[in-house]
Length: 195
Image 1 (cartoon, rainbow, N blue to C red):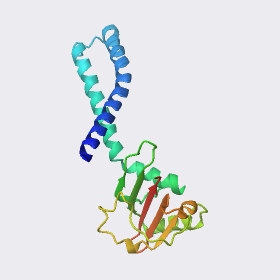
Image 2: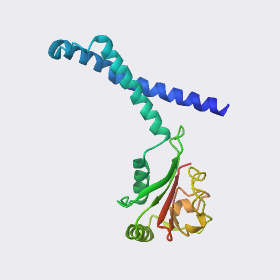
Image 3: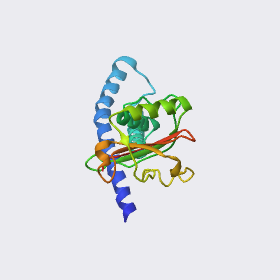
């Protein structure tokens, strides 16, 4: 039953994105048709081919946006890191594992990632987090974020001994943002949760 709901949701999302894309492509069709007749006179661009091209563009555009909604690119996780830590993502950073939930009706979601950095960037990020008033040392039990837990079995959670969390959220049962450091392997993980 759960799969039917998910398939229905994806289908509705696809239709919504397709509808929004059609709002743009419908006027574009008439504009291209007018320009072709008036200025370009491209013999191969018939009315039928133009409709086919715009339909194909609409389907590809909608499919791409539905896909990245469920499987965000690395830039999404870089933005998550930067917006929550106010630190620029390091050039040596390499995202190894990532995962995010789809936002619910209220816009709440969770995202997690594990990334590696070189030694200089590792210590630079750690020192900036230590000095920041936005974070406090977290002594709670650590586990990887829900979105990456099944993919991170090759990493030992106990190696992430240095952990910081948002001070306000630390008082709650689930921190809004937590960042943890594995000094031995130069790995950093973060978990952002807005539930």
